[in-house]
Image (cartoon, rainbow, N blue to C red; front, top):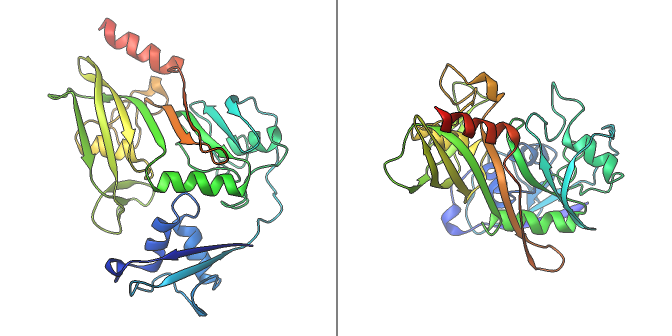
Length: 306
């Protein structure tokens, strides 16, 4: 069993326990995981169990008992994956567009996790449970590019802490609709789940978490713009939501883009191009980059020819 400790500040008084703990344990536990642990009385202050909808008083120390991972029932599969870097603690993987990161309803196999279990012979961190072993952070099914995978819990915890402290580099490239009058900017707008469609995220003040995306124009392409985007935070669908919020949805995005989607892209034109972090064992900063995939470069070429 893993035991985690988090101490709130006086200024946190009044915030829901599950929301605050999900933020405190970002990268380690999701809000839904926190809620399940609360239901099982695995979250407490002192000896008193904490309910997921309790409100913080401020200054209290939370103890979370995370049970050991149960035996995996996910089938390892010999699926080719592009490994950019690997050592005894972690891997950096270049995920192709169309691959789901971990099993979920509708995608029980053929995922990156299935491939990782085969490649690593089951040696992956257990912090995120039996469905997401090794997964420190995710990218969407139809987003291509780099993500990091932890082989043990110590590495996972250190990497998750870097994400939480914003010392983890994540740089994306995207093609978005419209032109920009300036060469760079920042979107600072909180993101939460849509009240109208629970499968979508949106910019909102209701049960939202702070989200910051920095962008810079790489090339103006008529009705479209090629952007470099740097994540300061890592909320679900963050780039896609923020770009749509400022009127520049990602090209090909079937959820946040215009009703007439560019179907030839088979999803959003969004690529996780650079990832950087301090190695959890040595402390040395490491950074990796990947070339633009064919679908992305082909789309750029077609826009330049128009």
